Length: 313
Picture (cartoon, rainbow, N blue to C red):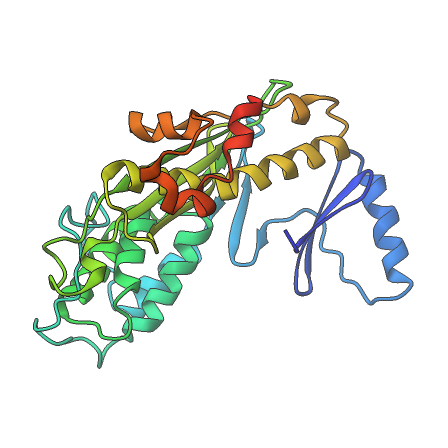
């Protein structure tokens, strides 16, 4: 990660001119800051309460939460929905298609579709994995939104109205072997029937996965696959591979952090479990051989097999 800097005792997370410092001993942080003050003008704000628009809340049980209730209020204000009723889910069960010949937008004079989508994408990418799928569906149609897409954003906003105080919660663990696990799935040709039959997008599958550290989501994604899968097994295997692209580097970061915080072999010995519900995809992932039917996805999606063979995953 280009924003993560490690020394032997201190970790720094940097975004432009904002920095978060982490260390076992606060004196180590003070030493680094004092050395930087020789060349830079710094403003030290003490304990962190917010970062890049995210509220950081320390609880009495040692856990802490990340929320973006301020951004949610901005979204509701921008859409004129501060007093709207809430709903229990952020999206309908039916996929959101282009609806090219549907009704045109009726609320563009009151709020900009692209602006609301942008705010929701930032929210979904930082503290709200529960709306990632719904927001990504709506974001696909930013170039030509129709009335059905406006209704999708309104449903997301109503869901956010009832969950303004929700976010991510990290609980401390007594285990000397931190858990970094993943759950992945795929929706094979999920847009069939929702997009025009002559549009290749209608047969694309969707990848969805979440990587959890000690039970808390740290990375998640919901997006259409670039390669058109020819079977459910292929769609699931591609989803598994995309999940591994984030999980494997994250395991290495965890090992580096364990060294900085003097956790011994905890990071090195950490074992990750990936949960996948397609037996054919699991068989292909654990097989040392390539079959003729999997040859066309071999180079792009077989890269993680060595990690599986080593027993780390």
